Length: 375
Image (cartoon, rainbow, N blue to C red; front, side, top):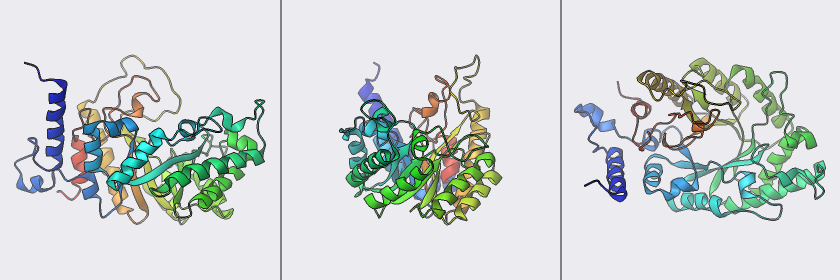
């Protein structure tokens, strides 16, 4: 007789918990290895920095995924539900339900919570930049809407959110420009909107840590542009505390030298650093979405697995060496069961970028990341 779905879930749940607490059947017979084989991420890095994960309400409703979050992580970030589009869909209406679920989970389990993200040119409600006639609003109206949105959202969660990505991805992808001039924020107010965003956030919650967050933030061609933006903010007196390095990397990049160079540069500005959105793709970085090519979906081959292990080992060695400036590392999604990279930049190209596999079990790379003192 085949086991029911409930029985399968219970068996998997037992296996997951067994692995976390050192009684998994896949342990080796090496006594030295058995001691640390199933140390959790948050245990392994408790003397370094908090280890976090981006979550959605669906993760919190799944008993197995809840167990994995609570066993492994000391910090969470709302992947999408605190962005302006989902949380503020109409000018006079906020949608708190899903964001509250994430916040209440953090409160109930004493988890650190990062807020993501207050000001971003994507996932914003269309009303935000237009008047009732559909015309572009003035700078003063934009600032009034920004201030109202930032204050309302931050005040609701100020008891539980310790840090916010205040502005997200404001640097241009062009090597010839610093600012993303196509952003509606920039088109209405120029670069001043960034300073205002940080000022409004500081008003709303003086105790919160305030971050600027961006992708490709260790890529040599973009690092200097991000540095220019950060220096502009500091010179203007913006109350910025740190820079978020998104960490959407791959088995091909960044190099250890590129990562350390960027960390040195940002820390020289007197800013804290957090790795905010970590995953290691099997495919090279691409910005623009495109269709799947024939023969491209290789699966998680042994060769790709070894390259991913080597890359994770390399970057976590750097992270540990920079524990004085890195104040948090957050994975972007929980396991290979689902990753945003399954859909971006190529829809339907399955990716395996995380430390836990599609049935929530630790991958080989997981053991390399947590057992870094093992020789």
